[in-house]
Length: 125
Length: 413
Image 1: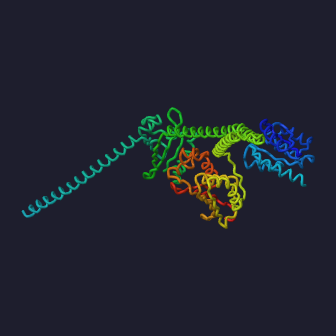
Image 2: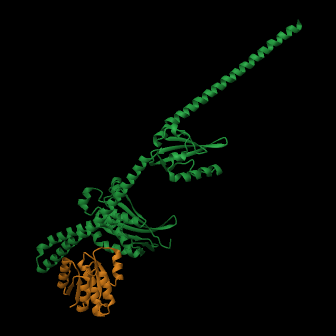
Image 3: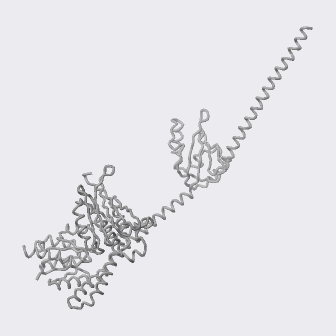
């Protein structure tokens, strides 16, 4: 069972995403801010990280940078989620080391395709 | 006797000659008097014109002394004619800080004949007798009389005009600040509105999935309606946000090289469900020489989607064509995307309102066809941001053609 770390501070978003992913057979672990996200990425070693960019304590951009700089976590794919549907965010997310990017509100099926694309790759490699 | 006769004759003759000369002299004198009278009348007319002028009319000699001062000069400067005549002009109406430049200018003119401020309308600051300074508009003309010069100035007090201009400028700045604040408010508000709305959409989707799994099919249509209404509201909020971003000057362009033909193919594929909805056909024609363009791909797509979805919305069982060509205009390359539909068309009056925000052709169209009424306004503005525009040709009942023209702006020219 693939493990996904969801880093999200908004309760409803966390609830929706984790429930829908769980129903599809993923094991979901949750962090509420960027700092906790970095810590849990090290302790839980998830197969994929879904990271909101607008986070308290440590924002998503910085958290992604730290994760990609550490050898223990740099191989874990990160999908950035931003609330502002702006073209600049995509570039910014990729520059911060994120592997992909999606906008909030999450279109669940589209996000699921992106997740499956990474986890499929993970298992074959 | 003979001599006597001759002398008498001679005298008579001389007398006649003298009378003649006297008559000539008298005629000359009366002529002179007439022209003197005419001159006097002319001077009087000019004096009356100057006296009644609504501008201050002041004359000054080459020494800088006041030689003429009309009633309006008395009004705006506070000096009576008796007091003003003979005073130094500079000390009378020029504020202290400008006296030195004035003096230098006068000397320069007398020496060289050059006077950059002469014979044109200028705006400067003048001094009133009571010491207050005020803005004036004036023109100065030098008049040569013999070896020397007289300067005449027409001066108008523009305090009121300045005040009105400043008030207008302030009002404009205030209006702009208010507009800016409104846009910032909308942007923030938009974010605040979207968060709970996304929860409504998300949870209705989840409930739908759960209802399907639990076999409770009867709830599904209602859940779909909640989700549909939420999506529509989100679309409206996003459009308002876009518009406020554009108006606040916060809509950024991310320019890159776009290969046009594949983008069009991609758009045609994405449009498929919408084209099929009203049983329409979409035909795309790309010219062979399209090549690339330098633009913001997301915004080009947004504008094209907008035109195409409008075409789909207003056409039923018809053909929509998307023609793309590259064209040279005055040495610059332009890309034209032409969307033609077989829809309901528009009257010239409807076309006039088309690109205004919150306008569909008429209010009943909004109920029948849905949509935000903001799409074209946004598309027009983003095309203008990229240096282009959207134009439209249409007639009621004969369909419409919308053309996006954008500069290709690449090295190919």
